[in-house]
Length: 631
Image 1 (cartoon, one colour):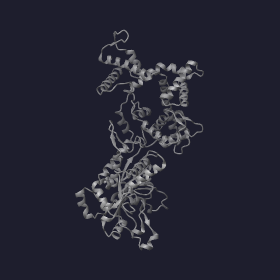
Image 2 (cartoon, helix red, strand yellow):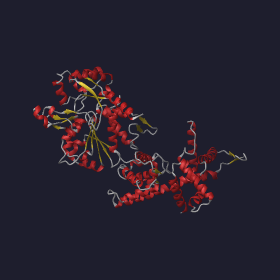
Image 3 (cartoon, rainbow, N blue to C red):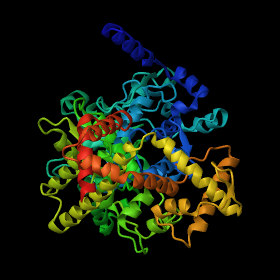
Image 4 (tube, rainbow, N blue to C red):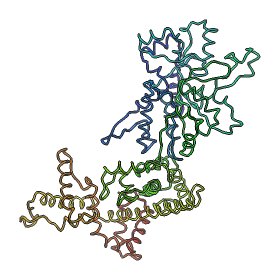
């Protein structure tokens, strides 16, 4: 499709949005679909619902509206959607300011930006269509034209709820231009746009001495006072403040708690009474979502300020902590790097995982539970099975660390460090070791990190390096195993046959002699010892495996070596242990013989073809693992 055709289609879409008619026409539309006259909070909730809401088997809710941009903040998003759900029912929470509080780089601004961009797109859909009185600077809801005495009858007859009054401009025009003939007042469809200042406003605090309240509430148009005679004439006033233009939509206060008090006072009546005090006019009705964000220190100072009690009572605070799950943290970097021009730079497997492990480790608080290290806690949070601990321990771990996620390394620091590594001249591939080196070097350049914190983070980098060492050895050993899946499956089936015989106290048939023999205790222990299952615990472990096997069979599902995380690890370790000497000799040889060279090339090809490596990082991995195994 050529450019002209695309532009023609775009113009056609714009024309379809350009509906215009009288108030009588608009009222007929509302009777057919009352959703087009929803209030601001209800409109936001409609937008989120339309994108889909699902609940997984663990009871965690997933919101389609956020899932491609916000990762890991399930509790935060659930609280946010609950707020809009309650506000959509016209409960008192809609008269509160929504405040997102959390550390820098935690996603507060991203959530608000997503809501703003979402409203812009939603208003251009059939479900999100929104209409306004033509020429109204506040994009007035046309139903405000209906006189108060008639509203109860209309609600009873048509189920249409009407709230709010005409702004001074529309009130003046209705009387002067249309001689109070409400049905003739012109109405048009509008589209929210932050750039065009329609339905979405943004206010950023600056120097209190130079910043004027008129940025929020509009100002007198001095050039028209001579024409209209008084500042109280609505034609002599510009209703173009951020609170005015955000009517019907969303108003973002950037770092609200840094604002001068005179700016915050205006929020008191807007949040509670839904009115704006503007110039020499009576209170002007405004229906808008007010949302802001701040950090923990600013919030604590605000809460401690007794003079701000009235505003404190009108705020609903939602925490936006850092992510504590490695797999979710990785999605942030995959998204950010995916938006970059990195066609010529390869990101080696495990690079983003290693960076994410370091980031999450920096945010975790030590646990008082015996044997619970930060690494074990990290793995448990990430959904992995950890020796001696179960998923049931998660609640206890979270309860003892209430502030967990409010401190630590931000995603911005990680992505900035990766950017430095990527931008070096001649770089074609970034490996996990490159990432760790960049993260370490960045500590000395950061102005936010003192010496004590730097030492703590250096120790965490060393801890992350140990985790990567295990990953690297496993990657290479796995690549050395020919037909790895088949080998694992064979070993698993042998183990399961023996476990079933052991638990049911019967013998098994020898595959060669066909004699009935006792279960192979040596084979079972060789596998179980790989993950530290003791002699006393072997019976319970085997029974657990058999229960899992039966449970899957009842549901018609196949049990494979990945069906039980600890058994999977045991199978892998047993296979790797059998091959360790071969791997060590092959990878560490400085002058490989033809047979070793053939194996190296074969493993390199397999790493590239099956595991996402490129020739550069595959060779680096082999060298690194060779050095590890030679120690």
